[in-house]
Length: 112
Image (cartoon, rainbow, N blue to C red; front, side):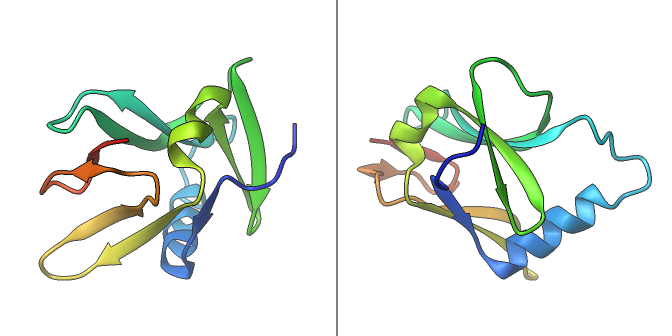
């Protein structure tokens, strides 16, 4: 199923995702999952990883790759931007979410 994009990716995030997808041992049946789960010091944490699609997911295509999101998670993530940082002090995906009311120092835990 196709829909308008609930989240966006920076060029650095797109390049890192494409690098991961192009790895020799990548399982092409999996899609990038963007989501949330309960936990973390602020109540919710971001989910970003490769997973098998389920009936609860909506699939989106952007920049020559597909990602999936549980239909109920867009409430928490709509408008979010995903970035990739490859600096000396921090390396990994970062999230800028306009829906957040509270975060903690780890950058992956939030409340709405």
